Structure formats: structure tokens, C-alpha cells
Amino acid sequence: DFHSFAEQTKRSAEQYTKARELIPGGVTANIKYMEPHPIIMRRAEGSKLYDIDHNEYMDYLLSYGALIHGHGHPEVYEAVMKQMKSSGTTIFGTPHELEMVMAEKLISLYPGIEMVRYTNSGLEATLLALRTARAYTGKPKIAKFEGHYHGGYDQVLLSVNPEHEKSGDAAQPNSVPESHGLPEYYQKNTIMLPFNDFPSTEKILRTCKEDISAIIMEPVQGGFIPAEKEFIKQLRTLTEELGIVLILDEVKTGFRLSLGGAQEVYGIEPDITALGKVLGGGFPIGAIGGKKEIMNLLSPHGGRDIMTVGEEDSQKREAVFHSGTYNGHPTVLAAGLSTIELLERDGVIGELFSKTHALRDRLEELYGQYGIPMQTIGKGSIFNIILSKASIKNYRDMEQADLGLRKAIDYELLKNGVYTKPLNRYSLSTAHTEEDISRTIRAHEQAIKTVLKQ
Ligand code: PMP
Image (cartoon, rainbow, N blue to C red; front, side, top):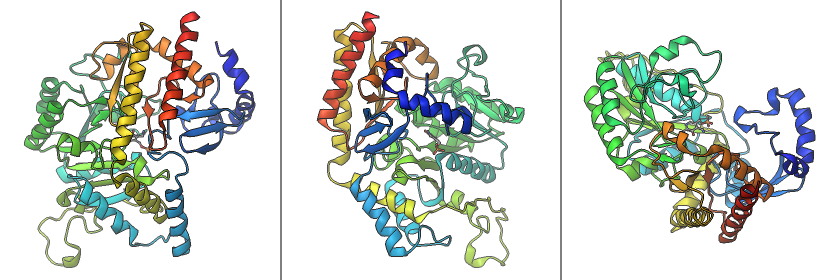
């Protein structure tokens, strides 16, 4: 029943009718769509979003986790303005010093990073990581985990959210395309692995080791299903043994689980790390970092020492192509550096985590009071609400959850001023206050009461 939602968001509905004529589906990313129409925003401040009908929402989407300090943090704004004013430009189009300042920062924070290259999105970062790994190993295929998302391109847009009847045996999942228009080639050359199931993963990898150049994984699937510590450690050891490059996709976990990402928390060193989101402070960015031996393949001379080019070279590796008009964008790097500096201040991350845990604890207590089987799962400042008590270790376990009830509650929450895209996870920011959390709990209680009456 969308009736009262439609009442509250009349202008959004009107504008959406126009948007559908101009933009396919009226949205600039498919994930931005929701029934019966998306809510069109007009303004934001701190932890709040304001729509064109003048409704206020507490924002738990935070641009899919990117805005770790909330909307319009004054110091991030200041850093951006200062960069543009003092340099006299938005972008040089040439090398500049901030590229090195950020690289030094990433190298000092991330155990697996010795050198850095920038892209303009998380998608481009994982794509570049996979290409570099193929060049490094000379092997043609890659492997990924069922349910993991690394960007919407042909090679990895497989089994992110596969239809039940197509996904096959849990111990040896099929590679299921998530879009029309994907060439069959990628189904054959992207091997699918079961997350948090080491014996089955090992079996597949040992069978295909001659062909697999790299494994790419989210250390915390979707930001809320953590890899088991043993699983990620065993995977690191096995990939070293089999000569497979381990790519850790930290686009979501980077700067969120800790300043040094999931790799710092888990105590592992991936061969290549992909970053994005928080790194750009709300502007578009991605980056890869890794071991020098691998990263140097990206140099214009393909791993040969730049200063000795022309001399006889024993490696004779060709360069891995990487380009982009906006790579290493100075305005974006200024926003990112300021965002990281804010996170480095004493107690900032700890406070963000304790706020998140307070919210999770109070939500669990509340749902318990109403007799709704519920748990929150996640790590750091991102979590999800699962309406089931079953243990959730991978994508398939999510089938246990009551999505219908969750969705009904999420629409009530939207009416009560809490913005989560229905069924989405919760991301928190340093701008969220104790008062926001109390209001969120009250909104949930109201939503539960209404839904239970229906
Ligand atoms: N990897 C992960 C783990 C992500 O969560 C995302 C974005 N949700 C991406 C890659 C792609 O990043 P972008 O949207 O910046 O292309």
C-alpha cells in the first residue's frame, strides 16, 4: 500500500513522470529506482536529506557509503575551495603534487599498498586490477565469489544476485549473467566461488589453477557479511601457493573498517587493493594499490626501470594500458585528503563505531520486544537488518530473511523520516548524532506498530 507514501511525495511523483521521458526509467543508475517512484532530493546537510516536497530524512544511504562525514562537511568544502583557488584551476591535466601526497598516505595506511594509480570510480579500479593481474600471471581467467559486487561491467557482472533456479550447487556455483547483453565469453572465463566455504573454494581453485590469474573478493560482502577470519587467511595462503593474485576490493571497506581498511583488521596483505567511495570525499574516484613488482607493469615501459629504458631488459613485459582524462583529479584528491585527515583525528572512528553499535543494539532490543526474529550484521559503521535468526555467512543464507516484512517496515520508515532505500544496508557518518539515533529508534517502533496492524 503506497497510498500515504504517494501523498507525502507528490512533487517527486510529478517530477518522476517527467524524468521518465528524459532518462530511461527516470534514473541515472538502475539502483536508484524504487517503487512506486524514487524520492527526488533538493538539499542535504550533515546527516539529513530534504526532498522536493520539503520532507526531511535521516540519511542512512550516504551515497552508498561514500559520505563518511555526512553532507557538506565544512572542512571538506574548505579544502576543495582552497585547492581550486590556490591552484587557479579545477584540473591541470598533467602530473601534480597532490597525487604524491595521497599516494604516500595510502602507502602508509594500507599494508598491501606499495604504489598507487588513480581511476574515476570503484568500477574502473577493479577492472584495472584484474587486467594487471592477468598481465602479471599470463593466465586468462579470473575468479570471484557469488554475491560479490565489483562494478557493473561484463567480466564481473555475474552472480551478484542470481535467480535461485540458475545458481546451481552451493559448493560449485554457476556464473549467472546479471544483465542482457553480456557476451558468453565472460561466463566461461569468470569462475564462481562459494564465499566463506574454504574446502569447496580450494577444490575449485586447485582444479583450475593453471588458468586463474586472480581472485577478486569483497572482505565484507555488500558491506555487511564479513569474511570469516580463518577463511580469508586460508585464502591468502592458498593463492600464494597457487600463483594466483589476490585482489581485495576495499571500495566499501576502505577507511570504513579502519584507516587501513579490512586488510588491517584481518591482518592480511593482498597483492592488489581496490579503493573508491570514501577516498574521494563525495567526488568520483577509485584507486588501485599493490606490490611494486605488480604495479610497475602499469608504468609506460611495462615494468622496466624507467631510467634504463633503451638498455637490454630481461623482463620484456609490455606495459599494461591505463589512462583517463580525470585520473588523479586535484579537486577530488583535496576532498579525499581532507576526509582522511578528519578520520585520523583522535577518537573519531571509535566514536563512529560506538554510535553504530548503539543503534544496532537498540534496534535488536526493539524488534525483540515486538517478537520479530531479527539480527543486525555488519562490521564497523555499516550494517544490515536481517529479519531472521539464521546464521548469515553468504549470499544464499539471505534467503532465510523475511524480505516482505522488511520492505513494509522500510516504507513506513520513509514516511517517518528515515531514508534507506528499501532493503538497503545502513551506513553511518560522523555527522549522525545521538539524537538522530534516538529518532531512528522511535521511527522504527512506529513503523513496526503500523506494519503489525496491517
Ligand atoms: N566494489 C564494491 C565493493 C562496491 O561496493 C562498489 C560500489 N558499490 C564498486 C566496486 C563500484 O564502485 P563505483 O560505483 O564507484 O564504480
